[in-house]
Image 1 (tube, rainbow, N blue to C red):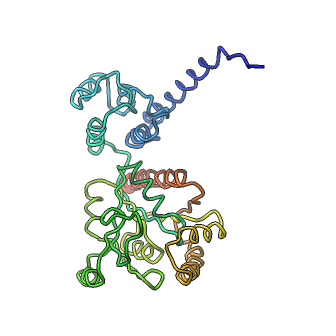
Image 2 (cartoon, rainbow, N blue to C red):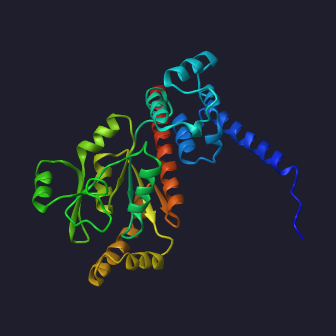
Length: 304
């Protein structure tokens, strides 16, 4: 027997949607959420309450933004008052980002390290963040290993010769570098990281345990995130399934992984990578919290 449609379901859904949007506006007005966070969520989650906010509601929820200022801003940005935040085009989003870079008091750029054992999925999670949260910069590491299938030079890594890597080490170009699995060398160019921070963007580094320790020495306020597998068996399965290493290389990587897993207490937080999207969102949430924490720390030091 076919169930009859519930005539009140649509109405209840509409009420819940309004309540969810109202909660976002209250959080913005109270400073509990940053305007950049809300905007990026709207643009990357089309079905979210953030995406359904009208631009007038969004800007009016920000501190110091009355109706006249909102109207003037929309005119400057070239955005119609009736548009929803999630429906802005690419150029309009860039204009909003540019405006937020100058006025958002809720965030300060931070250096974030994502580390973890071999085959845990660091690269896949970092790529998800790269594709869905473009406001977070990612430093491209240099490496002496050969590119794997599908990897693009300058996007996933900068693939360099041993001689070029030696020169970069000698000239102090790396924020950190290490020889990984007793094989290839990896390093993070210092200049690109500092340039992004100076421009007001947080930077995500996807590196190994040795590199994470070096970064903590150079940047004591960096946040270190450990990406862990759901289980040891799952880590082994992922490494074997990847099929990019010989059996001896896999054994060497698994021995290193045991040491890396034991280092979790050195990190600020652990994220379990059972699902790539969920893990990436958790990384971004930690970054946003770290940005806000930096501002809170500045306020406390000023109040003393």
